[in-house]
Each structure stands twice: as C-alpha cells, then as structure tokens.
Image (cartoon, rainbow, N blue to C red):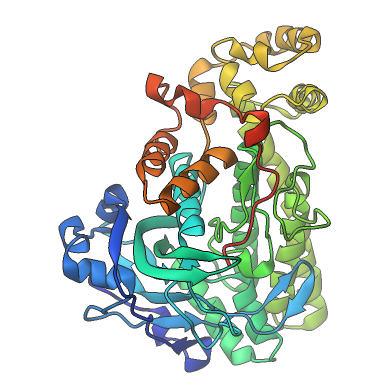
Length: 466
C-alpha cells in the first residue's frame, strides 16, 4: 500500500485536470526498481502483488491517489505553445520518503488526457526501456534526474509507424513542475496562480528562498550544476524545450536523448532537431534561454517592473559563471585534479585532440587511470605530449575512478535491448540495466558493453517516444 500526501492536487483547479488512467487489457510487470522503492519507503512485495501491479498499470487506484494531468505551456524549438500539459501521463500522487523528502509518482503512457491533442496517450515499449536505462544510469552517476520505479507491459498494441507492444513507465520525481508550468499562467496574465505556483515551488524545493527573485536564483544555480553534469558525461538531451526543464533542477523527459560515442562538440542525434538547436555544445546556451523565460514569468511577482527586470536580468546573467565553475570542477574531476581556471586550457587541449581524431568520449576519460586512453587515438603523438603536462598535475586516481564511468548506456546497446524486448526477450535489457547502474565497476561480463559500436551498429538518429 502507498500512503499519498498530494500537495499539488491541493492547488487551484486550473493547475490540472482530474484524469484517471485508462485501464489496460493484460498488465505484466517487466521491471521493478527495488532500491528506489526502498528509498521511497514503499513495499516491494505490495508493488509486485496483483494490487500493486494494477496501480502500476493504471487499472486501479489505491486509496489516497488523486490522479491528475498537469497543465503547462512551453517554448518548443523556440516557438511558443500556450497550452501543452500531460498528454500521456497521469500524476497519481505524492509520497513522503522516510527522510522527509517528497516525491511524485507518475504513470507515463497511461492513456489520453484532456491535453493529448488527438494523441492516444500511450507509450510503446522502446521509449519506456530507454528512459528506464538512461535515468537509472544518470542517478547512479549522481546527476539530478527523474527515476524509474517500474515498467509494465500492457498487452496492447500501440500504433506508430507500425504496431508496437505497449508499456507504462512509473516515473518518480521530486516534482514535475516545469518552466512551462510558469509560462502557462504568465501568458494568461494569471498573477494569482503564478504567485501560488511560486509559493508552492519555494516550499517544496527552495525553502530558504525569500521570494520570487531568490527562487529564480535557486533554479539557475541548480540548472548550472545539472547541465555541467550532462556535459561531463557526453549526454545530449535532444529536446530542451521549456516544458522539458524542471524547476527542481532534475533531468526530465528522456525522449530522443543520446550519449556521444566519438567525441564531437556539435553532436546531435534527435530526429526532430533538424537545425541542431540542442546539440551538445549548445546546451548551456539553451539553458540560459530557457531560464530567461522563467525570469520573464516571475517579473510580475517582483514588485516595480523596471527594477524587477534589472534584478532578473542580473540573475540570468549569473548563469555562465556558475556553469563555468561547475564545468571546470566536473572536468577537473575527470582528470583527477582540483582544477583551477588555468587548468581550462589543459582540459580543452584534450577535448580538441579527441574531436580531431574522433576518439571515444567515455573510453578516453575512463582509460586515463589505466593507461588505455592512448589506444583511442589513431595518432597518439599529440596525446602523449598532453599526457606529460597532465601527469605534472599529479592526478588522483580515486577521483578519476569516481568521475568517469567505465560504461554508459550506449545508443546501439539501448537499441539492441529494445529490439530484443519487442521480440519478448528482456535479458539484454536486464544485463544492460545491471551494468549501467554500476557504471564504475569493471566486471569481465560487462566489458563488451564498454565498447563503441561497429560501423553497422552506429546510431545516428534517436526518436521522440510520441
């Protein structure tokens, strides 16, 4: 049984619509995240029981659940859409973990809602397995992220380009409030709702904030850390719309995300990002753009308009310095050094060599500690010269071992796990999940998972789950 305490559902009615999930025909539990359940204080025996499975599939709601679809707007690839909302997800409610922290429990792929915009509200198995794998890897690496509690097969066919097996993901987040949630009320001129939302976010995520400007500063600081963490893993979100930026600072909405194999700063994978707006190198700038939209929403709550604009502008302009400090610290840790500003050149020299030779991003950094990084360079002369300067900094091997994963959920391995899962074989998914949730361990049975793709395995495009 789950004990819900649903603070968001106590906000005014225009924040959401009350929407039950649509039942499925033949629910089957595919994966249950026992460590996360324990973190939340949930009973895994109950979750895997018929009653628990009924909840995870959306077939029955336990006492205390208040299923809602949240309203929000968003800038999508720079164009504003005044009404989006949860089109294929339902927030069942919130739980308070044993340590007092509050978490949302949401079903993704649970059927149509009033925000579905003629969509079926369902998810097929591929995006569910992808988000499960990537979000749990990110959590294992300490990146702020939503989590995956369970994956359930629905026994139904979801029609996309072809018929595909349906599934539901149970997603856990400290909240699902987005920059686009603020935009939803700002574009409507609903100052009362904006104030209520800001107060709710402060109470839930930023209890030390003393008003909307302080709230903005808090969101900016967290996003600087999160984006730096993405960059240090070669992670490309792929769809950094304002409705996909959580004000908690967590990574959310893994749709067409990807990790680089061969390093290139302009790497982009998302099939819907035709112009490369959200390419790897552009992610910090897009974060600034998104945060400027949040600042615009909060200005009406800050008092006299001209002074509020000046204050909010200063706050947004603080992002680059915060991000650069986080980036320097993260990449310094990857080199095993307590990085100072003068070390930026050392880091950038290595990245330039990697880009010039198409060296594998993950394997180069992981191989610094055991000497195997040199093999990633076809012409290692430049790397050898760089290594002499790096070794002069007396790198800390333990620091490197913690910062650099031995393996990531590589795009081709995810695709292989999905293809096997669609055919009914979840063993590759289970093996990959075990490997990427222990990313720093070097076990023999996982070594193939650390290899880059063969030429015919390279994934050049990833796709949104809708």
